[in-house]
Length: 568
Image 1 (cartoon, rainbow, N blue to C red):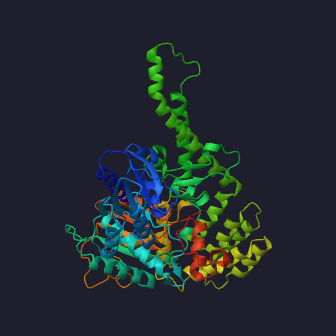
Image 2 (cartoon, rainbow, N blue to C red):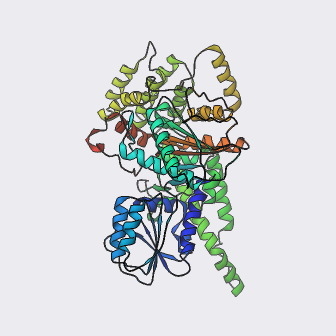
């Protein structure tokens, strides 16, 4: 169950099917992202694709010597663009691939437009999602809900994305959903409807234990996306923002021109692949080793290129050296910037208090620590607000809650009204009234003892004690203990055996901390394969935007912006 591989195979197959010769890849805004996350431009160039164009671009030249490979989402706009294209074809022959199911009437409209008979084939290749990591996918959607209900266009987009993942992985699953969320039920029903309607597509070889799709709602755990992170991929997204594997470093002091935007992709960056899930301390050591390794391989300044053999050896090694040089400068820059931000924003102190709020139950210590940090001028506005949000969620109904005075403290600090309003919005979005599960651990003696031993055994350090709620949910599911009363099956049948292939989808977005949980469960649970997906992959900023859109407090700027996110 590897979503990256599934998308890569689709794209390779498209390019190979068109045979030898020069090609142009014609895409839309979304399929451009889908392709760019799994393939670099240079990799596709090696497959004789020399031009990348957008179907909606008006000023494309006619190039009859090129074959066109069209990879498009089956939207009305795209079909319209294709009809225009086929009436006045710019290329010699067209191979058309839709990323999802397309209706017969639209195929008919395309056939009627193809008067010059330039279409060689039309197929459905189900790559209708962004494959972020092998076990993680996203739909890049922001603002999927209004209140506790779906934004209508988002329900159909999530259904399409989810069914395409099932088709790409060749799974026809049983479905379970979170009972406390009406949105989870509606998505489950919507996916089931497509499986029933397109039953021929879902007619895969039966496995002994049927696969399982579990649909959850972000509002059940609003704590995880509010925490600062300490593993490489999660830190980069939290502090710099990962958008389709790209990071914008243009604001970094003294950045060189060629490092203003860098790509971090585990597919073609060995250092990144090996360090994705390591914590910040280990990354520092590994960067140092990478530098030392690089210094050894660096061509010496005085190296004499006296013979042809010397020159040949230098030229042969140069591409690897150049690639390594790029990797080194990129990661040294990224890690350097993370270090600068950690020091500047005092994130070690902030994170320690966040973890205490998320994992401990000591109100008097928590309120003192939060207050102390709010009075520290070096703590950033965002970090001050997230501490108050975590306090509000953790001690929502505590008899001596000091929330009002903490919000006043934010006001004294000069925190904008928009940010202060967000505290209430987060409670509205993921507070006790909304949650279906027990996010905050009970405080009885047994639970405390259990937590204490868990603390001794499994915690690497004080900054990573927190486990997302998803960890508990999946652990229960794998052991066959997940309650049907809270996570019912859709339909009459239920799973008797322990599940093996599990697909989890989080409405409202997943996080890289949850992706790490899934990665570890996959590694440590033989016979179980889990893939996680979300309507987006959030950092704190994009999650707060999601919350504001859901609770209707998004202000004028974000009104009606239920669009595909360009996440910061």
